[in-house]
Length: 274
Image 1 (tube, helix red, strand yellow):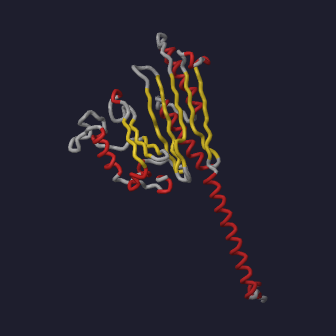
Image 2 (image 1 turned 45 degrees about the vertical axis):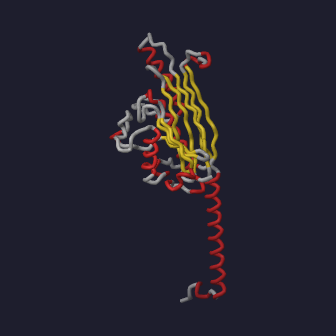
């Protein structure tokens, strides 16, 4: 019976083959690294604007029902861009659409639905003459190799005694496209630090209930705001009207230089101390 071919290979040939395999693996690895690097750095943003008005009226002329949306759109890095854009679209729908039974997913659908809801209201109540307005303007306020922070200003009126204004923030991990929460950004003791500062700024005694001066904190426990922004040099904490107090009390804001709260940060120092 003839011997297997491998038995006839010389030691030199074995070494040669092994070396070629190692070189091949190294080239594949480098190619994958370059591909991964390209994916991370190719994430880019453009600004998209869309608007719709009732019977093509012009908002500048007044007495016009309209909706105007301006927001960043990610592209270039497939799965990161998709995740970021999905979160932006979810936010736009949540901030404008108050009918939870509707299953709106896209900004274009949101604009159509806003005008349709007004028409339905006007038909049901013919004496209703107040126009609806919704303006959402979003922009990137900070980004680096690790983090993207966006700010959205909303001004809306759909009837009632007054309109609604808010400032909201969305933060993303640039490498994964994940939306970052306060838990992702800060260590646990950051909340204690902020509560102490909040009590001092708004004159709430340290030994009193957090709601003792008229705040509306749920379960009478201090919490960080849902909206936390990241600028070039600061961390921005923003409570919108109605969030922790009455509408008349307005917004509540706290700002901290990044370098001064570095000990509370979970994310990389390179992105937070510039």
